[in-house]
Amino acid sequence: MLARGRALTPAERVLYGGSTLVRWARTFAASSDRGVLRRAGAKGLRDGVRRGPRATAQVLAGLGPVSDDVAALEGSPGTKVRRG
Image 1 (cartoon, one colour):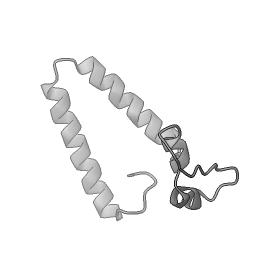
Image 2 (cartoon, rainbow, N blue to C red):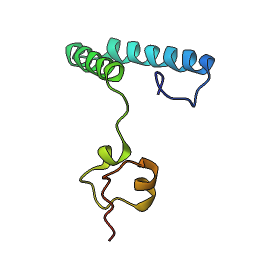
Image 3 (cartoon, rainbow, N blue to C red):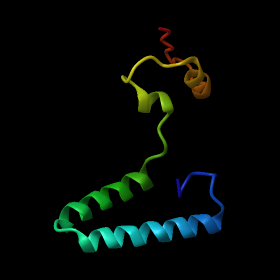
Image 4 (cartoon, rainbow, N blue to C red):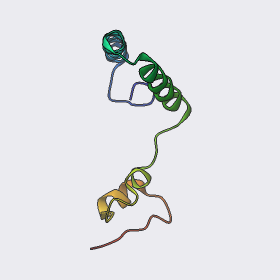
């Protein structure tokens, strides 16, 4: 959301990013297992920076029927639309 989203203004990105860092610092300080948080935070940051957003159909694959609305939003060839 911070890196690729268009919903936030630059000032909102700074504020949201700062509040996220403060929350992480508080959570980290209060944690009894900081190693788990450090690994999870590093993996989340790495994945967020490396990977682009996945298509909605890809995220929802296997969860049930895909509606016509989702298929239309995807607009990608080969998107299977299951009607049920």
